[in-house]
Image 1 (cartoon, one colour):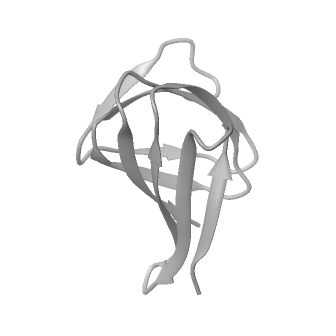
Image 2: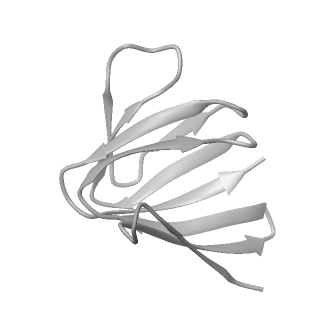
Amino acid sequence: MLKVNEYFNGRVKSITFKDGEGPKTAGVMMRGEYEFDTNSTEYVTITSGRMNVLLPGTTEWKLYNKSETFVVPAHVKFKVKMEEETAYVCRYE
């Protein structure tokens, strides 16, 4: 079953689904800066565009480009910034 998610007044949208690896979301973020909470470990892969990420416990933003993946631990907050529309897939553990 697919579930549509919408955040930040529609500037971030995703679709939740499951495959052989488990639960995932595929989404798009418009230009802007956003902060998210995690409930589980997240493996985020950029599929289009690029994303600046500020992970918990760090003080420097890191740029991730198409086909690159970053990991966010469970039960933390992290920030992202987009200078262009960016698509991603997120796998949850």
